[in-house]
Length: 311
Ligand SMILES: [Zn+2]
Image 1: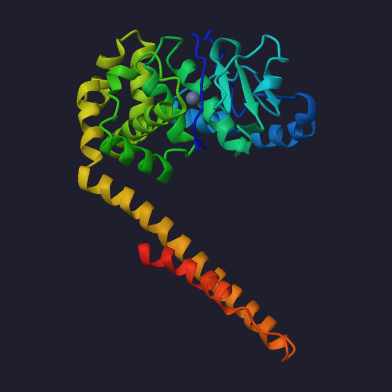
Image 2 (image 1 turned 180 degrees about the vertical axis):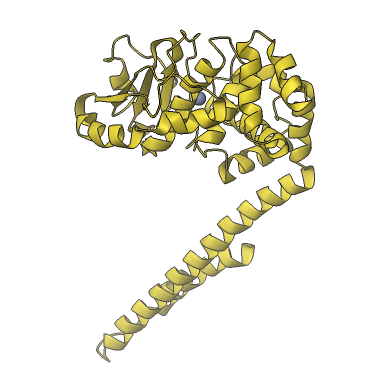
């Protein structure tokens, strides 16, 4: 469910040299076990990705990055130093080591490896742009999620349900950590993504780099945010809350429910027609001296129509 749910273990980043000219940050992908054949393709796709995300964060370094690719999180423990991440995570990053872990599967679901890699590269880039100073977890995750294109329809649905359940977490509560549970973590990511999305809409993409440049210069995060956007964290939080209206949230939830019922109804109708046609063929193929069994088959044909009427 949590296609876009990711964890990053973010430590302070060591200063890295700036790139000269068109030099790209080397990204080496190492495949572990059965994931080994996939490493070469991912390494090709990774070239230039760090520079792309850095156009948003303002980072200008090009120290090498290592990516360990495993089939799943169990194999991640074979990578040294071992990674320990929640079962719902698809990737993780350690900024001080310029190191990333990616999995091919999460909870049995295959995900978009380039998208997850983009998210984790964004974390490394944010750490560099901030000069190793810490930034709030919601800002870090929100920027990574937005850059990777993960803040989309799925997040809007999560926000709608959270609004109705009165579980839209305040940004101030997501300063240093996210909830561990799958569902609550999804809300935290969605709230963070919405905050960054609103910042970019109102103040442009350059606002992210401006905030990070302030943090790099030693300005406390909330002041850096205010200097770049005229908003403080509590004001941005109010914008997030306002962006998820109660009526719109209910409409989103109802729309999902209606779509599900409509789909179930269409499938039931198709099944009913197929059953009816098959039985009609069977009856017409029967010899005249064999009596049909209508009662049982009639019930089968009518059952799905109950589902249709419920919608
Ligand atoms: Zn992340």
